[in-house]
Length: 82
Image (cartoon, rainbow, N blue to C red; front, side, top):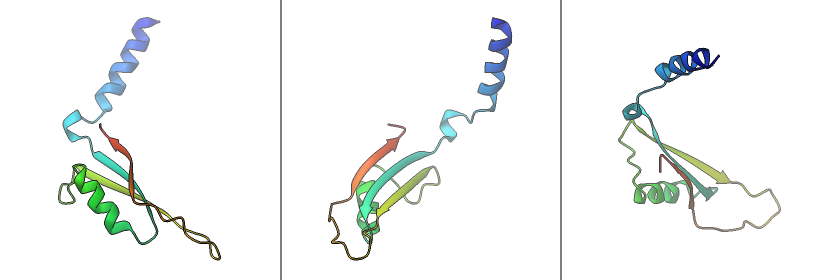
């Protein structure tokens, strides 16, 4: 049983992308219209828009009609890998 499990794990590990090919990802939360500020914040944390191995995810908070926006500065939600 253990050898069957080990064989399956080896097959799965072989299908994984090599670590040097993994994407680096940044997730930034910002208000609607502050996407440029989110990009600047990500760049301050190492994001390079010209590097194909870097990915920026921008989450824009949209205020419903009739409500006052809760203005916040963009903030970094997550960075992977660390």
